[in-house]
Amino acid sequence: MEHESKYPDNRWLILGVMSLSLIIVMLNNVTLNVALPELSKDLKAGNSELQWIMDSYALVFGGTLLLMGALGDRFGRKGALQIGLIIVASASAWTALYAETSNQVIFARAAMGLGAALVMPSTLSVVLVVFPPEERGKAIGIWAAMAGIGAPIGLLVGGWAVENYDWQMVFLINVPVIIIALVAGALIIPRSKDSTGKPLDLVGSALSVVALGSLLYGIIEGPSLGWDDQNVILAFVAFLLSGAMFVRSQLRSEHPLLPLEFFYQRQFTIGLMAIALAMFVMFSFMFMQMLHFQLVRGLSPLEAAIRFFPLPLGLMPAAANSDRLVGKLGRKKVVTLGLSLVAAGLLLFTLVTTETAYVQIALTFVLLGLGMGLTMAPSTTAIMEAIPESKAGVGSATNDASREVGGALGIAIGGSVLNQIYQKSLVIPESFSHIKDVLSSSFPAAMRVGAETGGPEGAALIASAQEAFVSGMVGSCYVAAGVAAIAAIIVWTKLPDEAATNSTSEE
Image 1: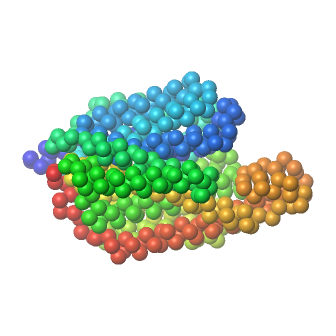
Image 2: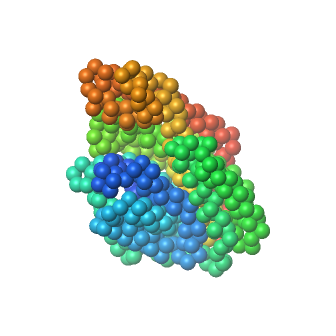
């Protein structure tokens, strides 16, 4: 009876509220993508401003995750979650109602990133402390499923908002959903925090923000500025220096922000790697497919987003039920199987041409979703089992940071591979030779110029650009398949099957 009393009876309802809060964060990562053309026109924003509207959220979110996770542990996870949701809702409402310049949207997106960094670690750390060990695998599987479907849902919501309303609706739609999550959370989420009362590691916190922020800046800006750009190089140098200083500070600190002994546990380290590489594949693939559906197949943003739904249809049941499979086969086999399915799905996708029927693409999406679900849920469970409850927020934040870095790398490297092959494959008709550089550097520009020109020459340019893009997409899929296959080999050889015996003990 004493064991039962530690965990609330309404814990599955709490998981529902955590899932809703998590989806809000994941939505904000992608919904704005489909609204950028209209936002650019309305606010007269240039390419660099549009880039910063997207990047400000990702940089602040990813850069402050460890700090915000630690604040939740130290001062209370429920409070961190509620404050984060209020920040996201306030920034969203202000942007929708009052933003008139691109700089205002950039600062609002940065504020939303800060709020999201409070929310996301809190959702998983609350799940960890309200569920008994025997139910955690199932609960974390559902959490991982919600994290996985957030991005496709974000594309759908963004497409619907832009097609039926305007870019402001992309922000405004957050507010009523957040109010529901806030009220429900205030009523049912129990308070929890690190009961040891250890002081916050201020030096480690500051260094973690600099290290993660500079790493993400370099990864995100590399493809657009060039990997040899001075700012990109300085960002990676800053990451190396601050990262080394962070490790040194954690080794010396009496109460470190992120105890480095966590990394001595293979299930923690390999779990983080599996999550990062799975997100590498997922984000690079989604980035390519939005362009593929819209510019090669001529679909609207909403129509393109709908075509993604076979992916979460595979991902959700696989993630939510992965604990049963882990119980039968062991975690190592399940995660290896998941990564192998991802690699197989990507290799199948290399057979896609401009004429391939959507049914074949949809079946490939289902296969990828199944693989993602079987990878992300058990890997997240492995990470959270390796840490004590007192560090649930920091452990969750580390998991979230691996997702952010992996996703950013996927878009950067996948996009770079696609662009290089596209540029080499594109055959530009002689009449467009005076704008050769513009056409070869931008697939959307080539499609737009071809459509505006019309006639046989315009049609020839469009056909060549589409063929070149598909060649680049296939090449990028080969790279992503290779990444998934390498990850599968590492997991098979390094990930232990046994659960950590001290996973739920307090320090």
